[in-house]
Length: 298
Image 1 (tube, rainbow, N blue to C red):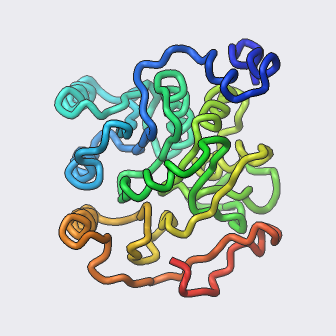
Image 2: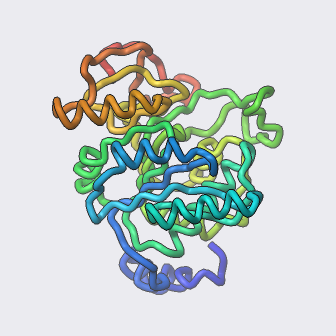
């Protein structure tokens, strides 16, 4: 950790976590769970759907922000976002250039802003096409310790991409990515967000933001929790009432899920599975960690 970080001295003077956090700067506001939704500048419709469904009427201990980069936007686009923020007060406008290749930078800048401005316990990062069961997620988080938690749907067998839009020319660590939680939705405790924020200048950025996070946290002694209730792969595995986060769903399906919760009390009008899940086997090498052999896993 950089020597200028004021918490460094606290760590060496007092090894307790309480001493570590007491010297943090005064924050702008506090919450139990901060939800970061990575959003594109022009995707007003996608933001509105979340505002009208799972992001509506959140309890006071949850704060949701749509993260948008404004560095390369013209005046008209910036004014439009400013008006949107005045109306909803839920945009986090950061000064970096939006692009497909800037997703990792977007996560870094988000973590830095949250670490510097929010007194929080957990951070949930999701995408615009993710549906979140905030009530069920909060019940789970209330039972967790809040230290060194990295919680999501993990992959450890993925081969490093050699071509295509996810090609990683700078990946030289090994032939596979280090175990990482898939980016459709994952939870970090505040100490891990602080670690990334404090060391952001030293951390190598890869094209894939969730691969990058897995590499940054790879050598740390932390609690990695693989949970099949995070349906956060590149496409949804179906619908299970136990899901906490569902990724890659349409606006229409997002409204349907929300209506189901309101009228039926559960997520799915009919549970189904289009692709098997898996339980991560941490005792196996990563290449054999994730076998889809049990259809009963959600």
